[in-house]
Image (cartoon, rainbow, N blue to C red; front, side):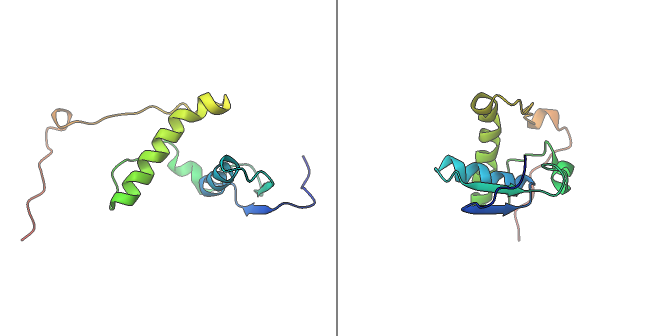
Amino acid sequence: MGLPSHANVVIIGGGVAGCSIAYHLTRIGITDVALLERRQLTCGTTWHAAGLVGQLRATRNLTELAKYTADLYHSLEAETGQATDLVSVKISRPSMPHWRPMPEPL
């Protein structure tokens, strides 16, 4: 597939951020989108974090974004027909014998 002669939106970088932007733009109806990547999608640093979708973050907004991301990965296979092979793992206190609550700050 060659490069298009024009596009309303051009995204440079086919990592997780570029792919996410392209996906979400098309979800809201902006379909004239070109995603440019020098080799293949997610071939840069994105693959280093593959499978790491932690749910607890430093702020509420980031935690909500992480939850949205996990929920999105679970729905992508039904939407696209492309398997994500995402497996959710839940860690609870009994499986962590050395876990203790942090002491209250002074």
